[in-house]
Length: 415
Image (cartoon, rainbow, N blue to C red; front, side, top):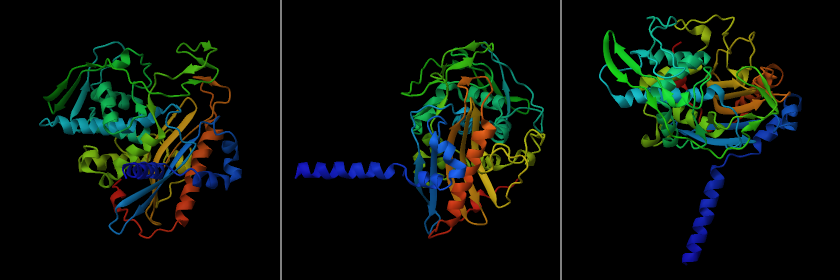
């Protein structure tokens, strides 16, 4: 009897694990149905580093979401450079830290002055793009979500600190990800461990001061594919005839990216102890600026020649500057682009047709195998792939039958 019980238990656990794995057949069938759009990628999925995770959302009679996922070429230990996609959990963790500090007078709107106390650190006391001319956590978040501002991300990284960021990743079960460094400041292995002192003010009164911090820990992951290409240009633009080593860079797997998005957008689908520690106004801030177009923003204000309507809505729109956004569709997303990789982690909503789905994907094109040379086939390969992929899934969702249509009013933001 005991042997039979354990046999049933093992079979049950095996079935449960299988049920939780993304289905791998649907996406390939859909991609192969459009050979004129996807044959190049399908014929070279490894060369183009393609990974896709698509999640259907079905509501029950109480509008509670239920998820079913489908994948293509998904491998969370096969490394790709995540670029700016790591900024989304950083935004969340920064707001969580404000809430957890629970200091009187300290909010995301407080003036945030950054000091400098270690090599390569820079101070910030003004921000001409904000309405007040002063920096704040909230304003940095707007810049990150609107146009993926690197300096804004660095300031959040410094506030949270490297150690706390990685503790939070672990806390939320994001086990194939790590955030180790800033962007666009040539962070070294040493400087990335040191974060700046920061002061928060309410008018002229200091409400919170944080000393600079040092993180002695390492965050190893059993990743493959961290040696890429055949050569690279170093920081002095010298040609180095060796593979480019990404072993000590940020990592953010496709599964973890979509897990963050799912928990952020649908906290009601998770137990209270597994949700992010965010207030209603935090969710509203993130939802608004994830889906807002740069041209809709006054503070910060952007030149539409550089940041057009659909800037960075790669899934569904690609990098098309001429297309106007469809009024019934909003895309809540965080993209990344670097080293020939294009990544987009998106939630697509069509309010008119009651369509909603999650789609996270990465694709790369680096035909010459040289890194840091700024010669990548973004326009020829990556942007069209993302656009076609998003529209393929959207057309499939338009035709997909649902027992209960969703109430999407939660995602109608005031722009």
